[in-house]
Amino acid sequence: MVLDMIYEFEKFLSGNCCLSKSTLKSYLWTVDYFYKNYGEFSSSSLLAYKGYLVEHFKPQTVNLRLQAINRYLDFAGRADLKLRLVKLQNKTFIENVISDADYRYLKSQLMADGHADWAFVVWFLGATGARISELLQIKVEHVVNGHVDLYGKGGKLRRIYISSTLKREALEWLSAKGKSSGYIFTNRSGARLTPRGVAHQLKFFAVRYGINPEVVYPHSFRHLFAKNFLDRYNDISLLADLMGHESLETTRIYLRRTASEQRAVVDKVIDW
Image 1 (cartoon, rainbow, N blue to C red):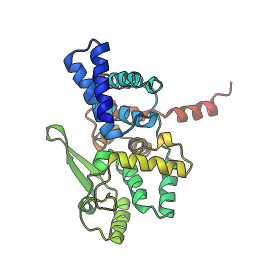
Image 2: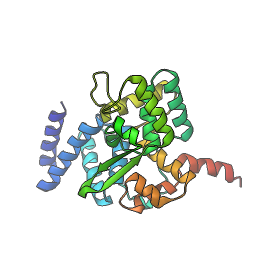
Image 3: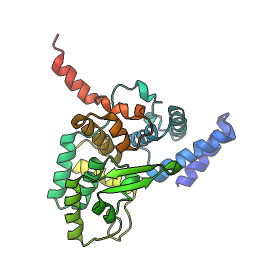
Image 4: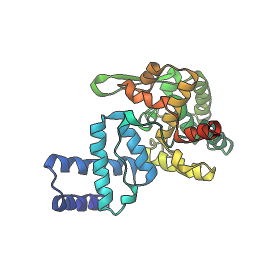
């Protein structure tokens, strides 16, 4: 069905838009990538994708991808989901970030209800700042070492640290499961979890525990990590290294408050 939709989208673009071959190819690739990595189009999955783009690409590339997505949404009759083009340096707040209180509540409820595996998914996301693709590469051996070394474009090293508290608790959890090697986040058949599967399950638990589903998605916990780190240790250069950002400008967004935090301050302070 997805392939059929992309094929119809290609015919739509070819017949209704004056796009160059390279732009047409880029639009089709973007939609295909979205389906493969984020599943169905929804406000939460689109925001997650937008966050990924902003973090990894320059504004010009981000906008090209968003234009492709918006063109597809027009084609599919879902113009209500269209995304605004971004200019990161002008943004005054960050959106849809889970609060520290909800993060801790979600983690504790999962533990209490016997969902330790998912509690550790949430814990690793919130305490390491890992992207979902990075999280799913973590092995028992990495937990033992206390860090994960990953290599990106141009052979650039990104080290993800596992705090001593998380390391201790995770090793006890893994020992109880009888797992001494290999990937730590797997399904019942032993295969690695998928980004889409993790995102879907997190939404399920958000609804179950009465947390706004809009703020419960894998990348939200990465934002939480960054905000909590700066609240406790105000070193933006170090945070940029921990997050794997190539530019401090990308990291500076975490100096901003969320929209809800801004609202709380305004309601508290302004009484005139």
